[in-house]
Image 1 (cartoon, rainbow, N blue to C red):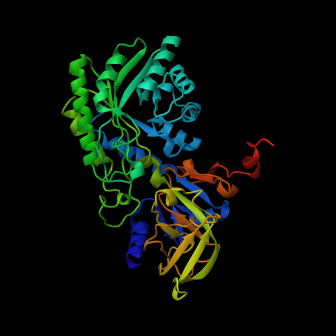
Image 2: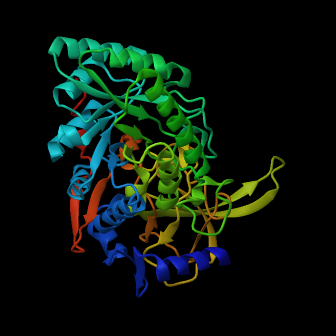
Image 3: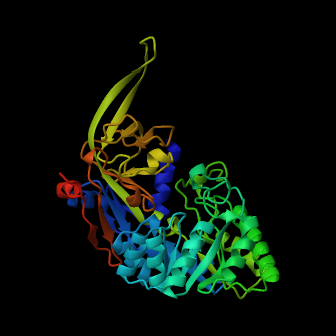
Length: 458
């Protein structure tokens, strides 16, 4: 517990996002305890400044290769206001569904600023992408290529494409986050030549380069370096045998972020992060420069842009102490439970990926965290509690944590809002933004009852 108090002190003293004011936690200068009372919990709070800082860090990391295009992976968070902030920062965007593409277009991105990804792109989606002159379609299969060829021939309209390959490089991250080894995405490396040759001979489908994605939350730069080496060698070989010159190389995303701040072995626990944007950039640029320095590099960061930019606020809504018995009905221990108004329907990674999020009492930040609690959500589901605490399933909180206190889950900006459900008919949350001026504004409202039933036909 003393280690967690040291970590809390470090966050409050050194983290650019946080500080304390009297007993309350401040986020970008805004009192989270007061904010939690102003809006109905649970809700997410995003920082515009932090999003821009993260984007700026990525830009600086790639300064040694000026011909770099950054495409924000909108699946990480596609709230319209967040997309607008990303657009105004000057970078581009990557989409994985036709509705993501449409949201990006609606917020003001031009087609030439959008990359379209995905293993399943339906015919009408591909036609929409081609009609809107998207910068790239990353092809994931021969089946998809045949559809693209048919559409372009019918429309007599060009489509720029990349071929997604699987470099067969494993990485020490969560199995569900691996995308370059025994994964569903991309084509076999040995099929790249045949696909590229087919595309070169097509009238309207224009081959621009190769594409890959190593994985997410990869804690070391070696998989990125190795996968880039594989792709560069194949690209160089294809240029020779096909007498063709690629315009770009798309290395995907995967820059990790720290969800645990203490010292730890990142290769054994990917939640420590392990590397930063500069390590990621160096691993990629060094390998590509062994081949060509004039080629365009495309990257697709998502988590790195928004993860640290948000907290999830929740209220302590109930509490109890329960006795644990063994199978012979002997008392084992007593467990103090705190129940909050947010469950895995709102922050699903806590269950599906056993993700770890720091949890701070925003109402009592100035006191020692001196008691172990289990923290559970409101859902009618035995699995709806937070499995990854400071000590196993236990979280460190002040002993006087009580009903009405506002708690904050840190680093909750990526893949959270996008994966919310209405399980138990509990509404999806509101989203609040702290803008560059330090003012809070509602950028998405909570679901209403009318929202819950308006899609039903009865």
